[in-house]
Image 1 (cartoon, one colour):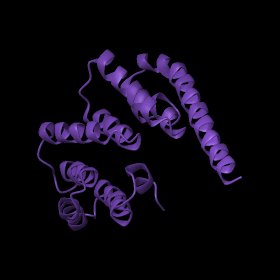
Image 2 (cartoon, helix red, strand yellow; image 1 turned 90 degrees about the vertical axis):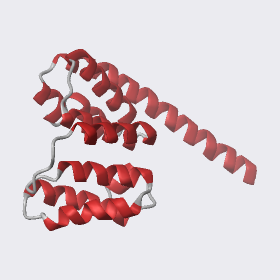
Image 3 (cartoon, helix red, strand yellow; image 1 turned 30 degrees about the horizontal axis):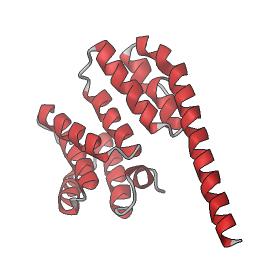
Image 4 (cartoon, one colour; image 1 turned 180 degrees about the vertical axis):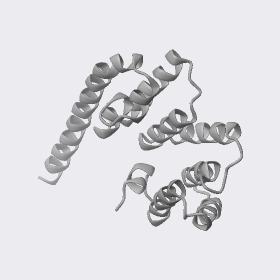
Length: 176
């Protein structure tokens, strides 16, 4: 009876994951038309572009769509690169997310106190690499300049990562 229960639970989990994957692939297919959208629509509009897939927790497919958009538009937009990093991290593709993070930091201009972009990216990469010292260092830099809205928002995200340090990125990022 115990084995039957385990087998049933395993079968249900596998079926659910197959169903979720198929649903995400269908959603990706329906979003391909978004590849012709302008950058603001594709990247910044809720329930449009990659954001529709992310809202459905289809992170791998969202990353695929962003990669296709970047290639088709020949874009090197840093916000788009950042969202690609996030989708890879949320999908559990940590090595690719880390690689993208290092590329973003290498290309980024020096940060201004009102928006410590490089430090935020570095802190996120440190979380993904398990480098708690670097994560805390960059978090504290943002805390010193939390008077600006971008730093304040990013500081809240970093504090969630720190509070959920042992969890996967998606769980830590969306933690309450």
